[in-house]
Length: 243
Ligand SMILES: [Zn+2]
Image (cartoon, rainbow, N blue to C red; front, side, top):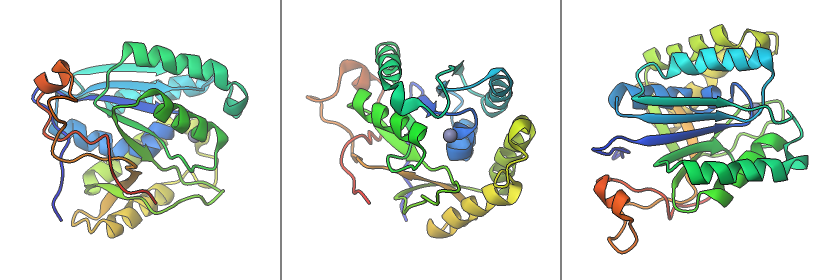
């Protein structure tokens, strides 16, 4: 299988969006560690939409551990009301409009469109509403609702990254460790399963939904001057297959 890389000679700007304090780490923590191990020019905006004082502290500790080698990191922890995102959607929509004005990411990681958690779905929908010409990858969060699907995009990695991801999550988010699913074997099991599906020689993977994907770059007529100057080898923001 031909692996594809998201690279740029000027560095890659990544926007991470998570409804709750541990979502980004669970959904794409291994991918971030892999990207950071390969590209120290990575610029990261890490946005969490709900928290309380305890969870904010945990989230900042965790984000710092994941982003130690980033060229630039901006960790923002907001306090929109947990569990009520569909009912305060206008406020969150306004917030996304601010993000659109302030950020120009190359790659966005967000929640899966079909996630059964209402807060996750709001963040996913507003990501697509807001960022109309960007590469968006939707990550998965395993849960009681049993909403895991059939992803179509994988990032593979080995034991070192898998173990590091799990260790940081379990160490940072002590407030969650009483939950029956918040265990080492849960996180490892899903990454091993996705590793099998992706044929990973390195055994582990995280999986994503890439609903639109363009290969071979954008044409000069469509690309902005800045996009062209950043010399993307792969601009993956348009056509792909759905599930
Ligand atoms: Zn969540």
